[in-house]
Image (cartoon, rainbow, N blue to C red; front, side, top):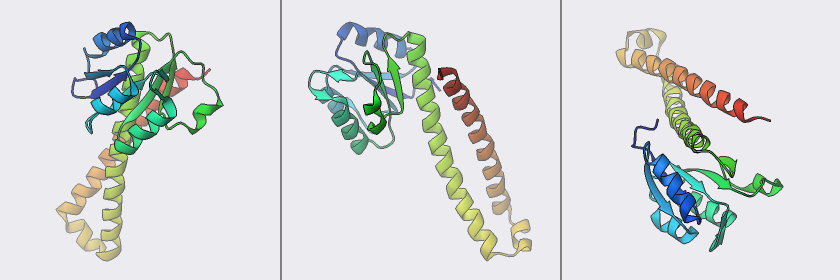
Length: 183
């Protein structure tokens, strides 16, 4: 993570804060910025991995903007970064993280990394699921002897084991990070 290829959109109406977030995160990621909800919609692309979104923007409410971004870009992870203490209304918001200002630059970067881990986990999980389906079909349709003799099937088995191990590693990382956030 953080090799510069990941794309982060920062949506913040406080220009000074936007500049701080941009200067810190652009050291690690490809960063785009927006000061309004309309700019966020205009700036965001299919390649955007993470959105850091201020909850209070002058031209829209967070619920409308989150819904619009998710409808357009399903593979994006959204964190609210806001001065608003969370209330029960966040339960229905389609967000992946919530940070209460003031946040340190380290907390901001950790949130981005956590969301990138979730994205990687989702991608690997889908790949693993696809490979499981293929393996299960072959197990049902081919004899044990054919399976043992197939190099392709052995590669499939090895891929499944590797993906399961990678998913376990990511889950441990994310779980450890989340446990660190618990009160």
